[in-house]
Image (cartoon, rainbow, N blue to C red):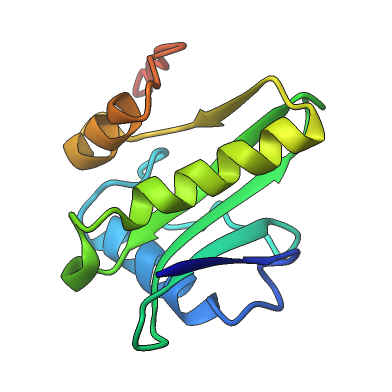
Length: 138
């Protein structure tokens, strides 16, 4: 497997997997804001994993924004048939390498409290909770 990079989510070979990943998160109720509006913008950068067969099997989108020393993951998705094979770990390792190269301080990721798999993956990478957002219905 190899990891490739696209500067823009609007022009990437991984566009179909970005859409599939967001659709799966919406269907499973794992969107961080409980809304179906994708957080992936056309200017988000993209890392994507390509299998030995040439298929795109994983995607990680991110942007460096409001805080200039922080990258924020906007979507991480691995095709179900490729899970538990190190795809996400490889994508995250490449993101870490890019962030170090750019002098960034950390990587943030907003995860729905119901998304146990994403929370587990973040902890496995050494991530830790930074804040709790509480929504109060009106």
